[in-house]
Image (cartoon, rainbow, N blue to C red):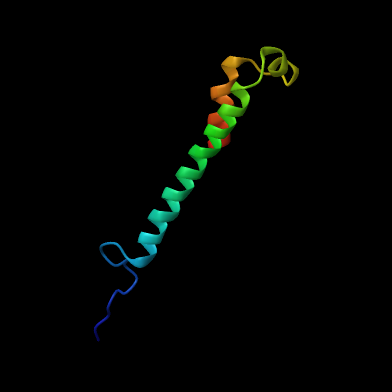
Length: 69
């Protein structure tokens, strides 16, 4: 009696892998854009306005990258 192992993945890019690549690219772009918008919005605030919300200019990059994750 012969047995075939059919549970291994197909080699190369399948339709599922191609769509996953595009989904990952779109997600990365959306995260980058969210960080950009956050960075720009916070950069427009004055030092006093940032202090009112408990931030400094040095915190802007950390906050922007935290939003992107």
